[in-house]
Length: 130
Image (tube, rainbow, N blue to C red; front, top):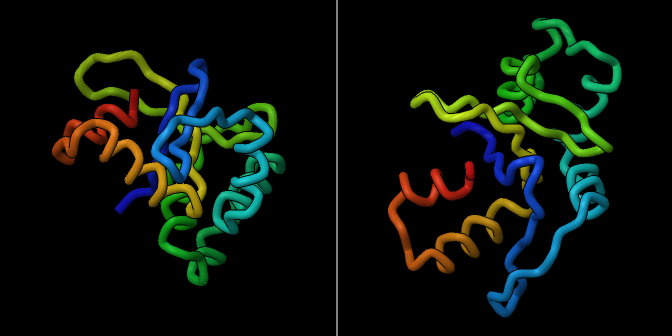
């Protein structure tokens, strides 16, 4: 399972609150949340350094961090927030999506799933990528 990314770089981000309402999530919220995720934090260091570790160093990495390592060229650091390039295979435009920190994934998926009226997997993924 690949790490989840969502929300394009040029859209305002919102997140589900405990009562199901949307609440704004600003750039500093993303910076703070990503810095609490050990895998994203390591990726930020690599991006700042401009290079990833050698393959020999990856054996102790988590599955998510190994995925980040393997697709390192698809990531960028913009104003302290890590983004991943999403290329639509069906000729859609490329988009930069924020990398969702682990602590937000369940709440984000649950909020979107419930808010969309329990869509199927394909519709939920398409919505998150847009």
